[in-house]
Length: 256
Image (cartoon, rainbow, N blue to C red; front, side, top):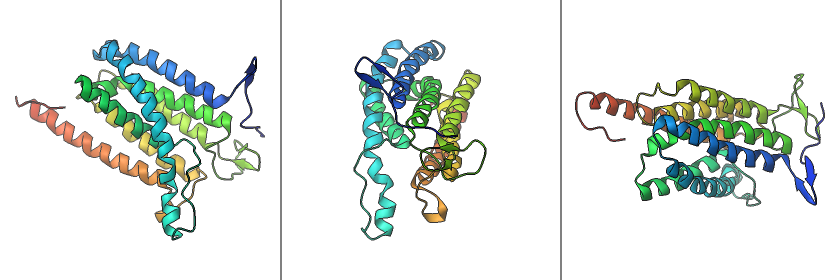
């Protein structure tokens, strides 16, 4: 199967519309709509959903771009500076997530909003965003996998490769449905977010097996090691918050 990636999907007058830009725009729009809908269930005010969106958009953009040079650091170190740090742009998923989270915390602190409840409200939107944005990556022909002889291999201009963008997208779909299914079953504010963050980290680790990225220590990529770190932090946070929940049942104050 051959795919001419990176070409415009269609033209609107003199404007070329590309797959990645289109799916990114749809992801943000639908994400806001879904978050507003979910806020009715979590009790989060609409003004906070709409208020935090600009912070998330700016933070995700800056984080995804600035994290790109970080990915080339292992190669730079291992080659004793013979390889270059990558400053030529590109978007990194975990960088976008961390950037969005950092900027969202600025809004939360400024407006004294329950952060755990807010991120729980945003989980379905996050899953939907991953689903759509990675379809955009597929249309753009980036983030592809290593060579494969499997029947679903996609030719991105050289030879059949694993369509890891679609594997990644499937992970977003799983998170979206889990978020909808588990809604209302949370043990405490932040439970849903942490559980889905752990699942997403596992998806990234597994996807990285077939992703065409440089591998380093233990044959894992920088992105896989980042995912392992975030998985560990999420697990610790889940455990600590679960203990706080247990303490709160004894009558002591719960701080989330």
